[in-house]
Every structure is written in structure tokens, then in C-alpha cells.
Length: 86
Image 1 (cartoon, rainbow, N blue to C red):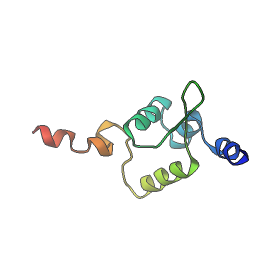
Image 2 (cartoon, helix red, strand yellow):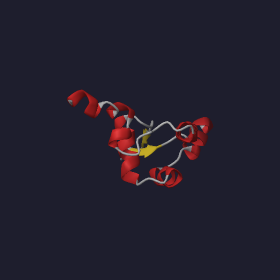
Image 3 (spheres, rainbow, N blue to C red):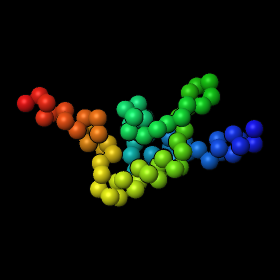
Image 4 (cartoon, rainbow, N blue to C red):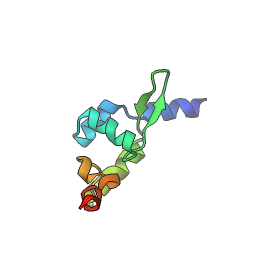
């Protein structure tokens, strides 16, 4: 049980991650829904929590110049959105 408690205390909230990534909290929620970033749901309300390791990987990818979803057209899932419609 102590291991679960320790894991929960190291998880980051939506507010903390949105500040780290300099994005609006709604953007972070959208990325979570789209699968750009992995979120874990906790509690009866289903609050999102993020692992610091996942955020570090995301920041590392961004520092290498890989897009991680700054807007919908940058999202990996939507990268060919306009190419297919032409």
C-alpha cells in the first residue's frame, strides 16, 4: 500500500503539467483525450494525473524538434489531415 501512496504523490496534476509545458489546461486535456500524452484517472471524479517520466519524454521529444500537438495540425494523429482531402 505504501508503494501506491508514493506513486500517487509523485503524479502531477493538470495544472502542474500545463504550467510545465506552457499550455492551457484544456489543451492538455485534449492531448490526453487524443492519446498524445498518457493520463491516469483517479478518484470518483476521474481527475487526470500524469507521471513525471511521461512529461520528461514529451519535453525531450519537443527539444529534438518533434511536434507533440501544439495545435490540431501538429498532432501525430492529424499530420495527414489535409493531404488526404486534396
